[in-house]
Image 1 (spheres, rainbow, N blue to C red):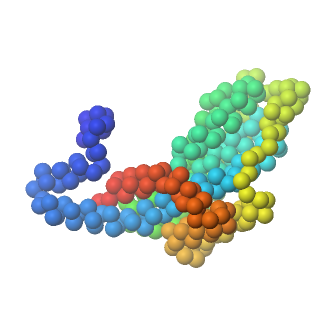
Image 2: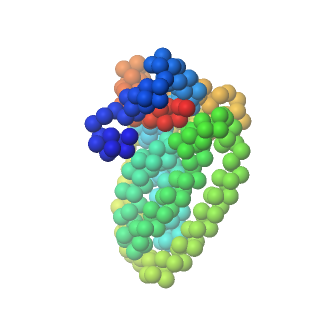
Amino acid sequence: MVIFLVWGKVPTILILPFLAGIICDYAPAEVAGFMMGGQNSVINIVVLFGFAILYFNALDDVGVFKLIINEMMKRLGNHPWIVLLITCIVAAISHMDGAGATTVAITIPLMLPIYKKMKINPAALILMLSVASGILNFIPWSAPAVGLSAVIHSDPNAVWQSLIPVQVVGAVLLVGLCFVIDRVKRKAGAGMTDAEFQEMRKELDQPVEITVSKPILIFDIILTIVLIAALLLAWLPAPVCFMLAFGILLLTNFQGSKDQMAVITRHASTAFTSMRQIGVNLSP
């Protein structure tokens, strides 16, 4: 299996498990039964993961995350601990879709130039990003959470609700870590003069490209808050919450079926790939 994975020319997740069942002296029909039973056992988790990716990527398309991050950057102060704290917040926001690649792609290009100008070792950026992402991995649509839920045969939303106190404690400790790293980096020479900081602020004060009106953006933020509240209070099953929220988001932000299908098509490959990997990896 490892050799084929490294080789990269054989669809291991589709063919090798079936052949392994045959080698273990099961009939093809029995192996097919194992596969269908495994897929049925994780279908709710797969749907949850897929629609979460579609929802948060659609939010990013219209500029909700960009607007929030831009507003935070306007409040950036000439103190290393503020830079570290904003790094954590940006990482948490960009990790809302549960995908680590998105978190890295947004957080590092945005924050790395600031770290260099403030003479903060970039290793601190990776540390803040990793810890913030780890804390947010408790959300029920992240890959680690759905993996845990599948293994213990529990609803991802129920698992998340039981871990919220841990998540809160982690967030508080993360803020404390920002102050600790701040003291370490100040002793190493981190910081900049007020003149240098004002020059950097001019570079950051760039207009954000928004594709919808301000009232729609406010509605999107409220919709997301309601969605999270629905997950916390278990008003409906988590996959249904994301299905309804995604449908409302398409209806209010994208005019006409053509634009709506374009959004789905643009992010379908990411969602499908993630859903397939989750489904295959978690199926017993």
